[in-house]
Length: 312
Image (cartoon, rainbow, N blue to C red; front, side, top):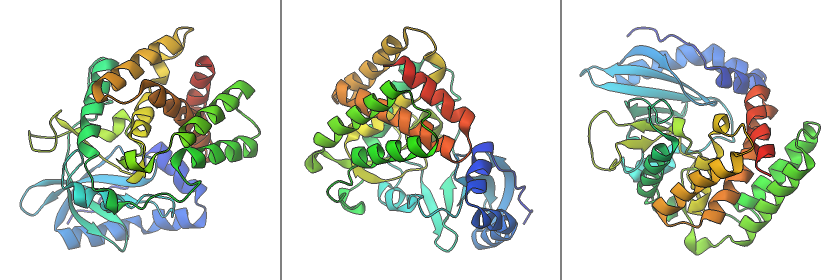
């Protein structure tokens, strides 16, 4: 089998660097891990692919000539157990999982096309596709994810994260942004209803929504989700994450109106409360900006935080 080219994306490099010796050891051992996976799954490596901030992703071909994608996660205990959602989903709303190596956490996945982020379309159309794909993904059985303990619902944990990171990073948040984010968290925590929870994806931004290579069941909009976090939460949370993006379109004084229109699209497409989507979206915008800044991606974090200032 050919030796895979190891080339990490910038956010992955920043994430690995934040892990210290464990991250350095992961990078050093990656070629050996890939050699083992090629032998285990009968793969010939192709080129590295764009991934998120927490994995090395590479294309491959099986002995039968079938295209596949292999994902090797960084050694971070905070990362989600992706098979927990992907196995029961069986391709409905999600990428198909063909195999999983529990020792390294590596995944052998269905090969997909370009992401929704890379697809030429208006934001409103992209949001419609994202909403339709999420509605499929929300059918993962609840029992695969534990119910959060009291005070550990997503809004409460994000509120603590905002306070902790804003303080640790020297208060990069404008006071009004911090106050509004915590207000949103309080409202969403108060509205938490276990009976209305689903297994959410957890990070359904347009780069995590990829086109299927050919029409198949489970992908009515022609796209599926990758990289699930897979925990129980209000389905409006996923839509708030979708609303968190679009920073390049929120540069003027009309930012609240622009983003409000996007919230309307998501609410109309899913029947989920617009106010809940907006509050989750603002909370996610602020917490994500702080989080990515905390592991060295200050430029990316700043775009989220500056857009938040235009929305309050």
